[in-house]
Image (cartoon, rainbow, N blue to C red; front, side, top):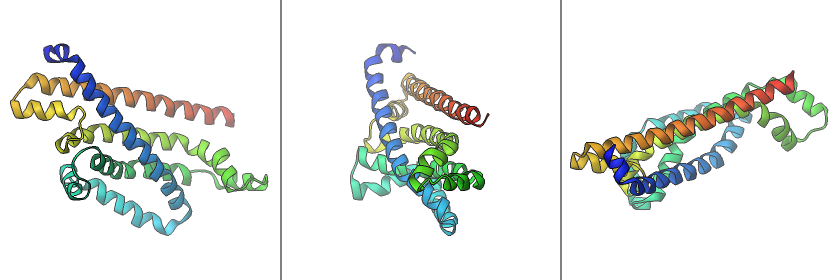
Length: 210
């Protein structure tokens, strides 16, 4: 704890770097994953091969994946974002797809009967009903990104992994502890916030159906 107190500014800098990395990854994860989930919901034959491919990517050792991207994108922030976004896709898309396919077809048919077009059905019916599962997937993707993101320090992407790597190399257990505590704090905070939003989305669905 002494290291954490005496080097609070440095730890906060790394914390902010880690948070920035996580937020950028989540932005691109949603940007890719939400349309992909919609595509898989509508084109059933694509589901198995797409989810299998995402599953293969997720099982790749993270350090190896980072290293494979270095010849293409060099060291730093960019390859870290690409790799972490690829890892997060399975967690987001799978949950998002479950949410979309779990909607009662009668509800969608009723929306068509009311004259809603595709975009209206999505924003007014599908998205609100599938939102809890989307947020559940986002929560899992966030926790995965925070955890795997520590390894991104190995390719100079910054973040709290710097403390962990430095601590291991120099056998400085206070650095390791400081890094672990900071990562845990970020994970718990993100989990609490997204779990809260997930519950609120579920409450909103139940209140409308009551």
